[in-house]
Image (cartoon, rainbow, N blue to C red; front, side, top):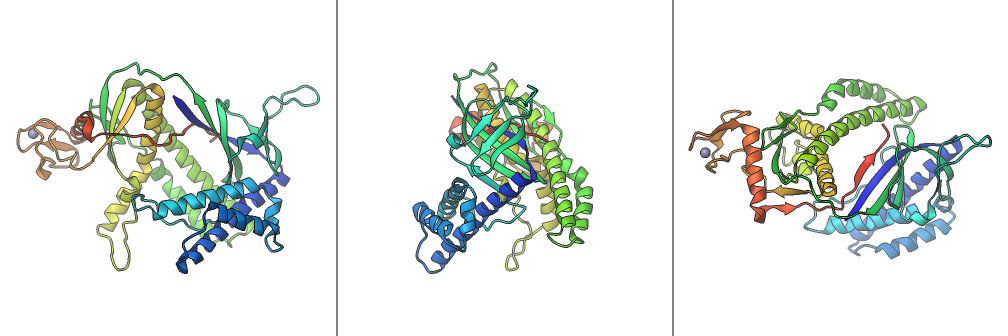
Amino acid sequence: MLIRKAVRYRLETTPEQDNLLARAVGCVRFVWNRALAVQKSYLDQHCGTLNYAGLCELLTSWRNSEAFGFLAESPSMPQQQTLRYLTQALKEAFNKNSVKKFPNFKKKFVHDSMRYPEPGHIHFDLNPVDRDGRKVLPKIFLPCIGWVKFRKSCIIGGEIRNVTVSRSGGHWYVAIQTEKEVPDPVHPSTTAVGGDRGVANLLTLSDGTMFLPVTAYRDLQKKLAREQRKLAHKVKFSANWKKQKAKITRLHQRIAEIRKNVLHQVSTTISKNHAVVVLEDLNVRNMTASAKGTVDKPGRNIRQKSGLNKSILDQGWGLLKRILDYKLQWAGGMLFLVNPAYTSQTCSVCGVVDAGNRPDQAVFRCLHCGHEAHADVNAAQNILARGLATSHGVASTAGLVGVVCSPE
Ligand SMILES: [Zn+2]
């Protein structure tokens, strides 16, 4: 079994390296935006689009030109890599079976990252000592940037696949993706469980276990709103504006970290105790799509829906599914996804479907057989039954990458 993991470390950059990195990610963003503009103009003229090789030729001509010669001062591989991503993004946007939208232009301070796809060019100095023989911070060699110190919070296990450098909240981070072949694991348990993701509870299992919701966002929301108002009063791109922007990013990071920790705890518990977990195949992105709609087609129940959106995003339903998926696979278990239609209105005992079975949010009472249960537990039992009737279950197998450690 192939296990893919990612570790993320904080870089300890010098001011000079800060400048080099900022310029390098700026160049990557420039290449993406310019190449996207070219592709758009080709599409406007009904000429199709350039393929990856065509884009690379274009990049070479830019790097050799006088106007865009600054691109040649930054590493070339991340620039080529972004063209590879753009080609992929366009392909997916035109694929009718894909939900991916047409790619957008990238913005400064939002998209500050670059990937080195070739691990052969990255080097490590993991146990350096200073002149007096004392241990100092380990270093990573990034082409065109040089040796950069980083805080190694856990070991890099496995063979390195690629390295991504990004800026967030005023700091630089490096994410290292690794691959390792291990013997196929055998799950110690043989039980299967269904899980209902909800708003009142984060997750309710078919055996009655309930996990409380994550409300990190709600708790810190007021603070966030206050800081965002302060940002609005500052001159854009001024020193104070940047400082405030970084503060807001750190607040977002804190919220995300709290949420992620809870999801990791929940998923560890479940993946250890059960070999098979069944969840609903919810398209979280569609569910959280803007409730406002458009001018021609205004949305309905906007206020309720945006409240629900916030709850869904708050809970991290999509993230929970991804984490559970790889943790189960690593443990020798499996995640199944089933059709979510009517799981909350169906009686788990007699199978009758009726909206009247749900007198309120928390209670399920079957109008046909009189079965009474907690509404979420009843739904989880339906989900489990659907998963066990395997013909409806689709084993979830995405290209899984587990993030095993990440600084705060
Ligand atoms: Zn019934």
